[in-house]
Image 1: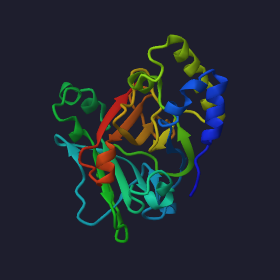
Image 2: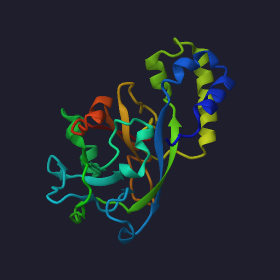
Image 3: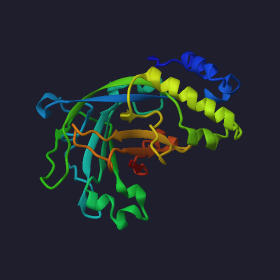
Image 4: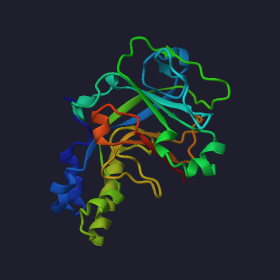
Length: 265
């Protein structure tokens, strides 16, 4: 099976260097593999149907109906063909075939409206489609009134990702030890320096936290969309959009309960 980097052994060394070795046995249970995605703008006609991509036009089954929120059409964010990723190295019970499609409203008049911000049913604010059979996909042309983004192929880095400070607090790893928290921040700096990339797009693993954005212990990151001027994708000024799912729903292939969080800067 493919192993994520940095290895647990390397993370343990960074953890120990920060003076946190006594917490390692508890902490290592929180480390999660995931994928950092590196998009490259690519003309639509150079992207095979069914290939993982960000932006552009979705490759969907016949009979597809474009999703909307309260009559406002959503935008196509990305599609992930899970056969391109070593999912079984994360959990052999996760889907290892098929394709995810991610949709979300991108009209600022909708996103920052009172009705959207205080929606009683926030799980209806996105659509995540999962199609197990990808043999008969077609490339769908969205209407001219729908906000769209430049099409991008993506490379990925298979990484061991680490939780942010809010989840560490939730898990009470340091028992409210302020000194240990400062040391944890030092460890995080060393970890991110080793990874050698900025905040970006992600599939599974942990989020990159911004300001008040955080990931609860009982949720899984399904997809993280970044602000990217070249692609034309903006979340507030330079924020992130997170798609979350519970572990149980992921195992049961239930994507009707996915919920989103948009965090701006």
